[in-house]
Length: 212
Ligand code: SF4
Image 1 (tube, protein in one colour):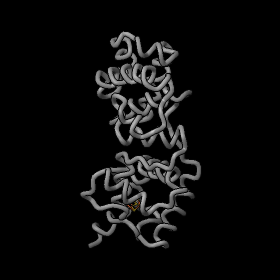
Image 2 (spheres, helix red, strand yellow):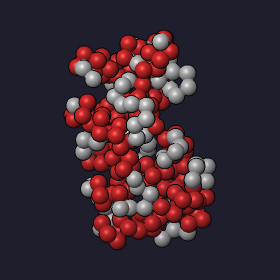
Image 3 (cartoon, helix red, strand yellow):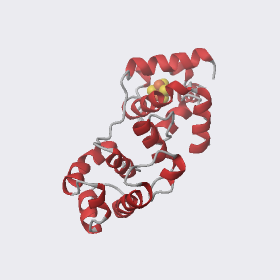
Image 4 (cartoon, helix red, strand yellow):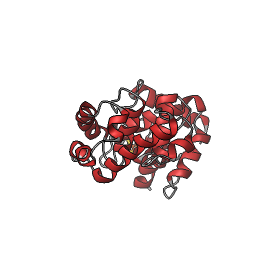
């Protein structure tokens, strides 16, 4: 991707979402990690609806580690995959206590050794908690990357992440990640994107495919 295109994309992102940031609510390292685990294949909004109840009953990492699994399930039942997620967050809390002295680790391999934590979750936590330059590729980031030619349509999330890391200046990783999520969530949606109002039409695969 050439510099002019990249500058046009960043300029539009900055204009639309100058303060894009994490939309999950959290109050501590482990509540962020749990919120991110819960957000897999569901919306941040639905996670924010269940976490006040969950963290209202279980107020510490230790209390989640020894919680009755049915009680955790009861709080998160409205979100997808709640049984697996309940088990993962309970075991995750136990591992953090046993192996990491009660603190969410910062190393990617340590994070990914925890139950329910994959590369995307680890990247989100590393960027949000520790401000490491990371770009987590979720469904929005993947779609926007493909539409704006950062990646090819058949690319895996691993390849997309690699390509983004190469194209985007490192000091913009975290910002670009949040802006792409916001752009995908509110503007360039999977269905019915706001193409009429979009300043990126000249750089867009979707528009090109529709006009050729
Ligand atoms: S032109 Fe439409 S599909 Fe392309 S980036 Fe803009 S909103 Fe998304």
